Image (tube, rainbow, N blue to C red):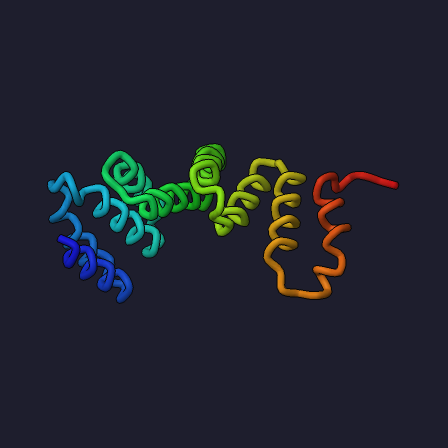
Length: 160
């Protein structure tokens, strides 16, 4: 069964999306592998630019047996897909769930910030991005101004 998933991933990487999904569909009746197969099918649709078709497969994957890494991938994938489709409130909910369950996954933060921007929460979005910049940069020039950037990130409208 793991070999089927590996083969399907290779087909997806070769942009053979339908072949990949057809192979994965053979696993959907297996209770141990169905969720994993749904996750891979969702990614296949996303990679092909068919985000709308991916949503049901992300949701089905989350209702089955997934490892912690796969669960993260499904939550993050679902949130990102909802956002790309303009379904910002659904996306926001899944980004927040992802960040709650996987707080150390900083790769989610830029996408969450974009979603906050999309729903009009601009200050929060900027704050997250500024904090992320300061915490991840290797730039000495940015590090030199770290204290000021962090101060402003908490209240961008503050005047002295």
